[in-house]
Length: 144
Image (cartoon, rainbow, N blue to C red):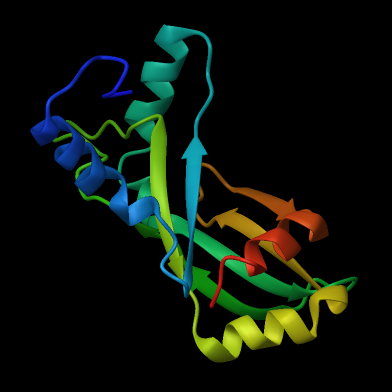
């Protein structure tokens, strides 16, 4: 983007610093989450009700079939301030999810018997989505 806009070296460095938390470091994955609401008045009203929701995202590893929770990893916002002072959250959130070596190995060893879910643990927006096994397999390639 900076190249297309014929940006300066300072702008390149600034963009690099801004996006660095989204680059996997060998023991984490990055997640981008978006509230996609086409109607602007509805979007603004909804986001106004969801202040600080960015602190309620989790990546859960569960037993396939039973859904029994094995572990729950917090999704750490890559930046503070995604909620404004008046309580409106952003439509887009960026997270880093750190994994221990043991958790990475567990996933690799048990890929066929677990499911991984991204969960919003908040009564204002209870939501959960199961990541496809193919996606989880690809994400495992990001780890050292």
